[in-house]
Length: 543
Image 1 (cartoon, helix red, strand yellow):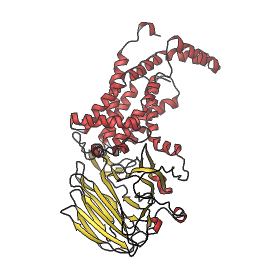
Image 2 (cartoon, one colour; image 1 turned 30 degrees about the vertical axis):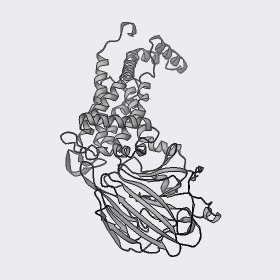
Image 3 (cartoon, rainbow, N blue to C red; image 1 turned 180 degrees about the vertical axis):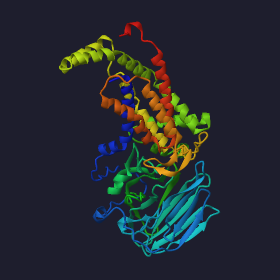
Image 4 (tube, rainbow, N blue to C red; image 1 turned 135 degrees about the vertical axis):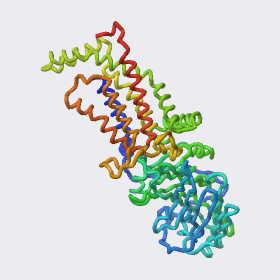
């Protein structure tokens, strides 16, 4: 196989792995029934009571009753437009503006049959605080909304939402008071909801539920959560429900012991998480209090990092997490230097190319030597066409004689695959790219570069005329023609000829930031290959 084929096959192999990565995740995580992890003891100054056998056997979530539409209470803060229900829950939460385009985004939208987000319940008591309306106290000037409801003679619930005026954060204080004449065990549970994807953030990267433990971050993809609840039982520091650009993080003031995440059916994509705390005995007239930090907003790296709670880990979680973290940090640095994410992508692509220049140069040199050996290899193929064992022996002897590694053209490229995949995921998920322009017709690096709109739609491509994918296709054709098509079967040559077209279809409607990276990477490879092609082999290596 000649050098041109080796180069393009290596590129194709790396991108096919990139596309197959979500499938690989499913394969390494077979769908087995959720098994809660072992609960670690949690120290507390408050007395704890072991749950009764009945409480242990009951469903972890109190089933919600489909309540009739009641009163709603609108609320507006610097960052959010909120609608509270008469049960003291959040029916709808809309981020007022985000990104370069300053568009709004709905992050919580109560699905049918639900009572809303941030419900509080006592599962071991069978109490969901849904039977009666809550008494509201709304103060927009102070950025505060308070709701009080009770189960007569049993428990009183006070919920206070305080909205941060400087950043999109909410602080929730929960207090349950024992109204009975006896000490009662309180197993507190607080649930949250997250709206599904919208037209702004459709992505091949699946929505995901995260759970932060003391020593690691674990997660499950939406498609598995839709099939069965995702349950984690351990010391839980915070939870997050994430989709392409947005995340809903809930952090209690002390570790919870269990989180259960469920999701709507396919097509809805909403998710719900309920976190539970260890049961605590509450004396008559006394209260159990918990506080929560809630972040519903874009997955901006610097914003998540500013909380100093490790929230930014969700951006670097996964099989290639370490590479993603490095690349994300480098992309942020490049943006500070250039003040434009398009130029930042180009600068980072050049830096990556420079980092791998020794490997790439080794690959091109190896391919050049392989190409020079093609006449002798063809001669051996003719001589030993009926003796495959002898052909293999003589071919390997030829390689050894001329110090050529037959895998030398592919191996350096394969070693770069983790970087390619990690950079792809970073560019596909980086919220900062939404609405970020580059130059001329490229107005949004998170969308196809759509220079013109045709009066009709083309099959598989749509009505947009995207320039960058066409430039990328041209760069692949140029790269393919740098080396003469020698050796290989006719079928192999035809496959290589159509490879740029296949890639053109794959990339045509991908975000322009991704296509820009691939195009610039191709052009840098072309210039490098032209340099190597024009450089004569050392005399002792001529064949």
